[in-house]
Length: 258
Image 1 (cartoon, rainbow, N blue to C red):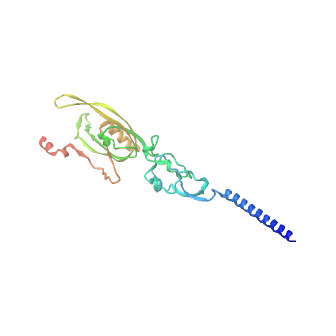
Image 2 (spheres, helix red, strand yellow):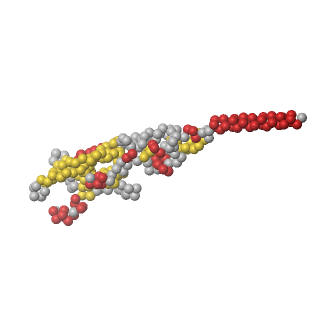
Image 3 (cartoon, rainbow, N blue to C red):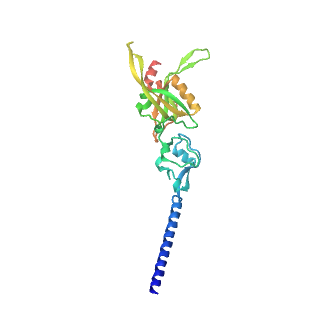
């Protein structure tokens, strides 16, 4: 009798152990099945973000939104906020629903090719070192563009009237999107004694993003006057004023001449 009781107890323990193993096995299957299925929050594009579009503008336009995705579907480098890319631009087109990746944003200088905003044109001008702020202008820089000219007015009878030389603001703010390599050109000047002096002048091609109207102004100015870039900061103040003429800079000389 005692032996039978022991055998029944052993059988019950084996049954319990088997049940426990089955439960653990099934639980493991459930865990493996649900692994990576929990939902997490990531930042996605709610509208197309164009190549070269800055993060601040895209955010102001409501092009970022937070979405729930499965953890298994989160792309490496996906962001949950724009705090780390606030000052960057999109290095390629980002489509609606696409997860926002840090690697798809950077400065314009990080781009492999020329990044032109969709509503702009790319226009290039060749400048010497002083005219481009001694090389401190780089892709992504904002600049004001000034012109200096010796204008001539064509009268109705076909004759020309020379107007006072002037310097004034042409474009208050444009973005530089490309800086070419620097080359050296020769410039010949004549001294007061009549001697010719040859100078080696470094020149660099800079490309800016402008609309059609500003492109026309810049192209005309670069062909008919001297163009200079002024590097802007966030606190720079620029106003469209009449500019400065020679008689304003040297009034005493002009009064004597009259």
